Image: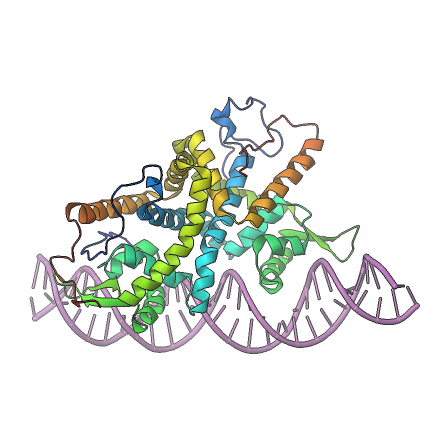
Length: 202
Length: 202
DNA sequence: CAAAAGTGTCAAACATACTGACCCAACACG
DNA sequence: CGTGTTGGGTCAGTATGTTTGACACTTTTG
C-alpha cells in the first residue's frame, strides 16, 4: 500500500470554471493558475521538508526541533521572546521543543548581559553540527531546483514567496538580513556578497 | 557527514569570485542564498495557509480537511487509494479526516461503476461551496503575490517549486493537468455522459 | 474457488500545537 | 525603596494530525 501507483483521476463532473481566454495580461490569474499554485505549494513544501524530516526521525526529533535549530543558528543570541515571535507559537509549545534540545546539549542558554532575565539562545558545537547536517540535506534539494530553474527563475521564486508572506514576516526577514550583514560585515573577511539582492517591492 | 560539496562555500569565507549584478551565474548558490530559501519556504508556506486556516477553525476543521476538499474538488471521482497517494498519508489518517467530511455532507462517496469496490469521492454542493470559500481566501493571497511579482516571476516561482518537488509529485501533477485539460478541453463540459452517482443537484 | 486488491475500522501511541493558571527573577520607575 | 511589569519557565489539560498493527468485508481476477 505504500507504493503509490496513482493513476489519478477518473470521471469528471466539473462545473464550469474558467471563462474563455479574454484578458491576456490577466490570463495568468485564471482560476486554474491559482489552483495550480495551491498544488505547487503543497507538494513543494512537502518534498522540501521530506529529506530533513527523515533524518530527524532517526534522532527522535521532529520538524519543530529543526525549526528551532535553524532559527537559533541563524540568529545566534536570539532571545526566547523573539524566537517565539518568529515561529509564531506559544511559550509552552516552544518549551516542549526547546527544553529537550538544551538537555541534549544542542542549544545553550546564556543570561543576557544587558538584561539578565533574558536567556540568549545559541547552538552548541554539537547543535551546530546537527543543524549543518540537516541544512546540507535540504541544500541538495534546493540547489538542484535552483540550478534546473536558473537564476532568473530563482529571483522570481523569491519575489513570489516574499509576496505570499505577510508584511510582518517580510519585515522580519529584512531586519534579520540587515543584522546579519552588519554582524558579518564588521569582520574583515568578507567580500561584497552581502546584498542578497532582491530589490524589494514597494 | 557529506563531504564538502564542490562549488559550495562554508560559512564566512567564500571565494570572491562573483561580481556584481552581472555575474549571478554562481552567485545564487551561496550558502546564504540557500538558507534564505529555507526561511522563504517557512514563512511563505505559513502565511499562505494562514487565511484558510483561520476560516477552517471557525468550522471546527483543520488544514487536513482543507487538503481533502481541495484535492477531491480538483479530482472529482478520485478513488480513496489515489487520494492517499496524493496526500502521502496513511489510510487511517485519511479516515479520521474524510469520515467527518462525509458525515457533514461535504464529500460524497459513490461506488465505482467499473470496480464496485472503489468509493469514488466528490464534493457535494455544500462541499463545493465551502471549498470555494476557502479557495477564494487563498486566492487573495496568491493573486496579490503574483501581481506584485509579475508574470515572469510567477513563471520562475513555478519552475523552482516544481524543482523542489520529487519526481513522483511532478509526474502526478502533470498527469492531473493532462487529464484536466482533456476533460475540460475536449468536452465543453457538460455533466458527464455517465452519472457518477447521484444525479441531480439543486 | 482462492488469491489479491480496495476500503473501512478498532486500538494504541506519538508529536505538535493550544489555553489557562501560576511562579520566579530581574528590571523600571515613581 | 516598593510596586508593577516584563522575560522566562512550568504544570495540567485538550485537540489535531499523524503513525503502526491487526483485522474484516467486498469485489475483482487468475
